[in-house]
Image: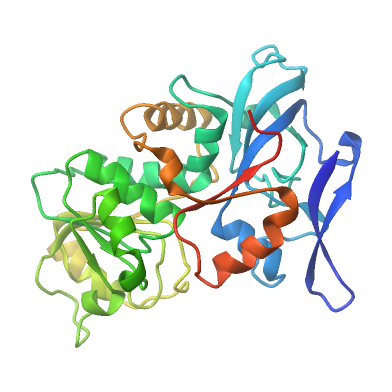
Length: 332
């Protein structure tokens, strides 16, 4: 079987090689899956290009933090040979050999049945990015989100998570402001997803730092983070929400307690890795029904084979992609 394996060279740099492996060489697990599709997430691109990113603690490893496919071996009575399934998160592609492989071997407790309403291909167009976007929208709703209220700001809107969130929210009737550094080239893409307005980060940052400013948004879907997060926090309405899921803009920001104690704002951390199985299955059911973006294929920037992944990783790191990279292994 073929698998894209990452390893370190003598100088400590990440190298990638499409190798022939035996299933027995993969990380331990009691379910073997014939991989039909995977996807490319920012975490994958970091792991493939930067050994100091902290994503991977031990090389070599088969990358790919999500997959969909067909069970070909199982010793768990709840998972049958022939079942169509999804695996995302946990240690997949980080501490456990991942989805960039013709076959994957994983623990049964990581496996989610493919819900009615999704194909294996659609599941990986969504992938980890779509799952995390769904978590973010779910968090907004649970904290009182209301389509009739102020707009929702989506940062990093041309990325996989951001673009999915724009579509999910707009389909539910929210007014969505999409933020992107690629405003000039991506406006049509974002408007087609349902964004009512497209803004650059500079347009949303304060001229002078202050703990509280005018209330512009009921919520923010934020896969970016970074030192400017305080500016955004200052502009969220009373009892509003920030669903924070990423740190592409950095891991530190400085703020005061005032937005939390004077406006009751909720800063909700979104962790897609360790989600209890029952909650994970419920969210995938929503992604197959009320949160499923219409015309999922429109999100695909490029459909890739395993050997094309190295160039895709660099394109993502360079910020030159829009939407999703879908990885076709066996296909449907």
